[in-house]
Image (cartoon, rainbow, N blue to C red; front, side, top):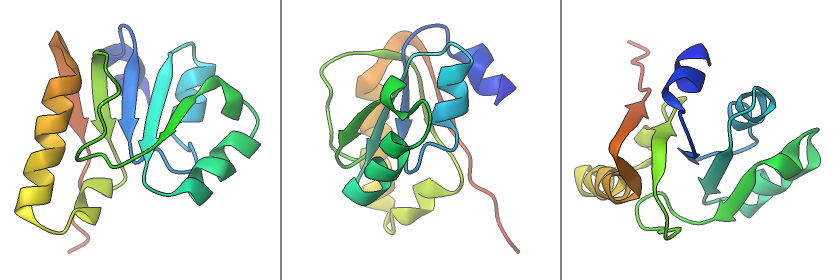
Length: 115
């Protein structure tokens, strides 16, 4: 969380925001967080949680959704990148993130092996 807050010098975008387990505490720490998630049900869970209205949430696909603005940080955590089952999908996700980033922005991907 501290690393994300440090990297988030401005607007931040979380791919696969889900229930907001990262976006909500980051927002509480004063970071403006926007999130994209494929599941409207997960977005509803996040919106129902305390502080859920502070996160700008969008229903969409992290490989294609274009919000029409740029961010200082785009991140995808908790192995959510592995929900994209093909290399082509993962490449499209990274291309989407590149389009969304400011010129000096950062992309953070957390993917851990369980083996």
